[in-house]
Amino acid sequence: MLNKVKVKTLFSSSKKLAFVFLATTTIFTQIACKDDDDVVGDGGLRADPAAIIPTKGKTYTYQTNDEDGSVATQITRVKNVRDSSGIAVYDIENKISDEGSETVLMMKSFSKSGITTNEISLPAPYASILEEFEGSDFVKSIKITGFPQHQLLENNAAIGSKMTFKGEPIKLNLVLAFEEEGQKFTSEIDAVLTYDDGVVKKLENVTTPAGTFSCSKWEYSYELITKTFLDGELQEQSNELRFVNEWTSPGVGVVKSVESDMLGTPMSVTELKKVD
Image 1: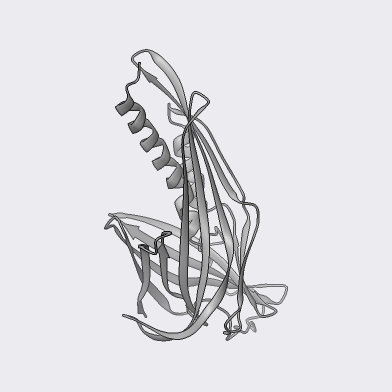
Image 2 (image 1 turned 90 degrees about the vertical axis):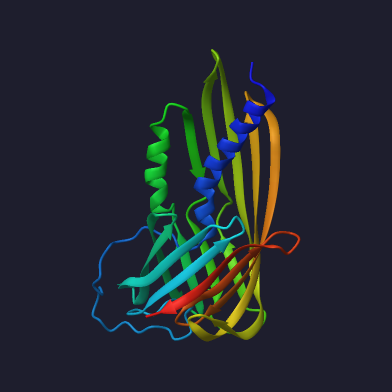
């Protein structure tokens, strides 16, 4: 018979697996796209100067500090600009280093009719993660839905400019099968991640180690609801609401981002450290 300590450990481990899948979806910079340094088309594509997109030919270095003390570094650059029916589509490479490991994530962005759009497909790293866990002895099933997602930002730097999220909530269902002292049981995780639309609350200059930038300050939020079950019975439910302040600048993208809990305590801070 499982004791309370083992059950608690089980759910802690299970929830950790769930966050492995959902954590990266909180960064709208994760699209798998063609790995190609060439400009496709007639070469006459012109960048929209108001687009909230990094500039081709520059490299942006970010640092993220989480409340648990962990630090991650992200190096971002435009890998490719291609012509899609006369619209310049930017494929952006993000190399994220954290505790000795490196993950390469991609972003696809474009500007049309005064709106910058980030189109979010199932992130490429999920495929390898899914394959890894699906091949394990204790993972019975994994299902992720809610992709593609779209994030739309109005380019005009004005108070009241809108940030809109389109798509169904991102959902993860993870079922794990365990055996302890001859007893078999299952642990199931249901996690739902939902974004709320945002708005520009302020126009201000923001100074980071990379310099001073003229920014729009966006405010939006997201909620992660996680339920854990043991042999079909609900054991625990957590509702985590995160508030995001994000500063963006045309030709750069994100300059700074702060995620806070309901009490206003910063949980994660990302800053632009260097532009080369």
